[in-house]
View (cartoon, rainbow over the protein chains, first blue to last red):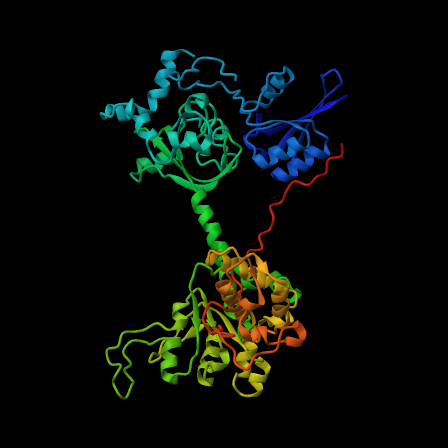
Length: 128
Length: 479
């Protein structure tokens, strides 16, 4: 059975905000979990409500996005979707991590501590 | 990354201040204790530091977001398309690699100091809460005008927005309520009428809410931030009324008695309403001479103050009202026909309560809630008998009378339900046939509120808001 993953986009990053995303990446996986199809959709305008409609219309199973309001998060969860929000990082990184089963809500995928070496995470990969 | 190099990069923005004697180690402490949110961002708007207030507001700890682009930390509505420092970002259409020159630098070199920019928007924090904020982005420049870092100051506007919402609810156009067809029609067209600059004639019996409607028109109009001036053309000598309405132009040199010699110029009601709205509460009470001057004012958008010669340009929206039939007033010669046609550009009629059938129960419940809260009483509703009496009554004083009646009933009611005994006697015994109540005794006892007081501010239907429900995502799942 195929599965659809939607990633909200801002350039090549996961969009920092669900309600302001004007592009999405729609990836369809085949029954074996391999990527079967990939589409980038440009939305007419940014709207969390319209994005929820699109997600349901396209029968998406997983949503990967940045900051999201509680109302929309719970709505999509209520619709039995998997919602992984609060992601900060490149869209491809987020997708790869999801496929490897290591992506969780709130993950910081940018190298944390890069400019501030005094900080505990300095010098590391910073992948949460 | 080499820790030594990285540490140097981290402290580099503060090097100038350190040279001036400020201990670099003090800066985070100083910023941390500020009572508003501060983010220190590097030249590419990656996060260096969040102070305590911003940590609480965003839900992120400074250390776990160091190096993360600020748009993923603040998640502001201004981050994607209206980023305040976009021009300074090498990676976002800015100045290319290396230390970018900042447009703010030119201003700094010219001695004006780097400009900061404020904008309002929202952020979504880690707890999925949308928070209204004001962002002020302050670029920190080196002596050559190059960008060292940026301080983003974030103020939480939640309390102010909540207050604004509360004030809008209590004083905005939502203060007019009603569910009958005529009232729904009125409420539907109100925003469009308010948005225009046309003169408006309000008609309706006493107590139907003309004053409130006039104020609602003003508050919903683009002139809402300017003055709303109410004029009651009560009987007074015409010369005085002239000054009252159109102002006094300094020393009245031409006056025979010389009493105004040296008098200070005095603005009239029209001058006080400049850029706002003037409300003439009973237009037919205005003497015909002043009606003529008003007509010229509407035509010429200018007025000559009493004792003056030079016309003064005015930008005032005129809303007039009358409790009588304006056509009959014209026929009777109490209202100038030419003025009537100018005022009648838009006419809004407020129906009397007896023609607002289904509104009576709605208004009773509406005012019950208001007065129960005001008097801190647990009055929950009306008994069937009381409701029957109140529904059968014809309210000659309209909403004002209905409101006063509910206020009285809540005042005297000791229990949870308003019974006929809590109603004013003239209601209890007004319609015995219709309501099945006993006939009136020979002498009515007790305190009775005036049927329709002229007290200002009681004629309308304030309080409730027709708040549109937040739009929810629609359920369109096919699976």
